[in-house]
Image 1 (cartoon, one colour):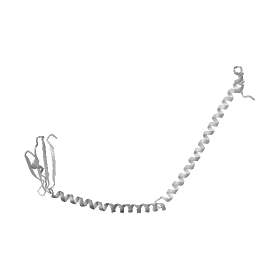
Image 2 (image 1 turned 120 degrees about the vertical axis):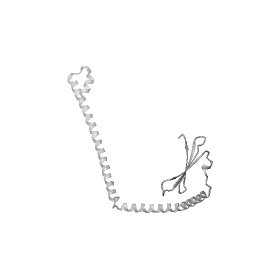
Image 3 (image 1 turned 90 degrees about the vertical axis):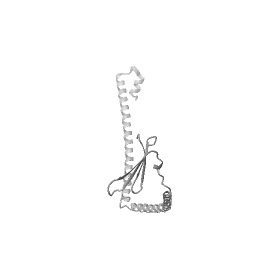
Image 4 (image 1 turned 135 degrees about the vertical axis):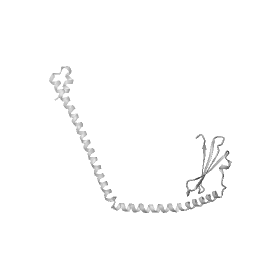
Length: 181
């Protein structure tokens, strides 16, 4: 038996209404069948995806259980790994200390040598070579407070001043000030 679609193609415009109607029904049924097959394929693909997802979830649960059992605060792996890390840390610290100690001694020797050299150098008096008048002021902050000495020299031709402040314990603070600043 030939399908209504084939008869419609053969007869063309001469086909009767029944053949046209049957061909239309067959076309709709074929379209519905293709749609149903597509939905079945998608459902099978979704089911396969869910199977893999479930499989991954089961593996993740097993791994989490393993970590919880062995790496918890009381787990045997935690103690073993912590002991190994502690021993390694102590060894590294000892090795570093062995290497740093001679360097520290060299630095102390060089620093003390520089301090001795600095102490033997003559002190440079900046204020002796600064042109212009000098103002020397002694400041007492109270009866038992130390005395400070402030020396102001200048101005030079460019309008700068030299200021020194000597504290009671011998420290000297110096600054060059511009009059326009």
